[in-house]
Every structure is written in C-alpha cells, then in structure tokens.
Amino acid sequence: MIQGTFDISIDTMKYHRRGTVALKSNEGTIEAELQASDLEPMYFTGTCEDKDFVIEGSGEFGLHGHVDFTAKGNVWGNSIDIKCESNVGPITIFGTRISTAAGEFKSSHEYMMAASRAEFSATDNTMYSGLFSDGS
Image (cartoon, rainbow, N blue to C red):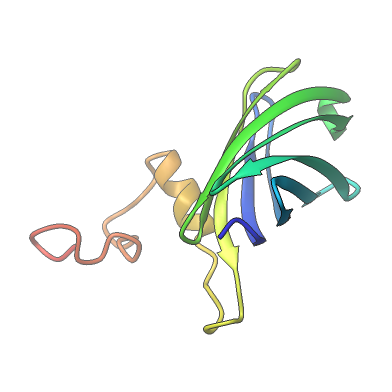
C-alpha cells in the first residue's frame, strides 16, 4: 500500500534533514505533503502505479533556494525509498512508515543514518539482531 505517513531522512550534497512525508493515492494520482525541519510544509502531485510513483515539481528548499526536481520512488512494506534528480544535484529520501493501526512502529532513523555512514559499534546491533550466525 502506497498511502501513509513516513518518518524520513533527506540527504543532499549540502545537508541532511529529518521530516515526514504523507502520501495519498487515488486512481493513478498521488498527493504528497512534505514537512522537514526548517522548511514550510510543501505539497506536490504526481502519478502512481502499484507501489511506484513519480512526482515532478519545484519548491523553495532553504539553503538550496529554488529547486526543480523529478522524484521517482516506491513503497515496499513499511519502507519508502525516493531518488530525486534536481538542478542542485541528487537527493535521496528514505524512511519508515508511521502507523498506529497495529501498534506504533518505532522510528529507525538513527539506525538508518548510522548504517548509511557505517557508524555502527558492537553495541548498536538492534537493527541486525539475528542476521548474523553469532547472533550479533
């Protein structure tokens, strides 16, 4: 299901921001509400099919100023992954669904960021528990 609200990380060449994106889909159309630290809420529309979507738009993005972009993303399970091509370079957005339907999903933002920057220590193995043969 593509609809939902996601706790996200936004990575650009200049900065990293946290925020949320809420998606609503209806008959091949998608609406997105982006809220990120230090930015006014932004609203975009695009097209979607199954779990994939494309949004072309523009907006004022703080340090970057006016940004024109094409965002291609997908939702799989409780994860969202978006790759943007823009006039300021590549933008990557990733995150996890926020939900109360079956109990609150704990945000894994800190674990995702540590993994993306290879900053895990021996005690930060919660995310990978049970994946390795030694149980770490």
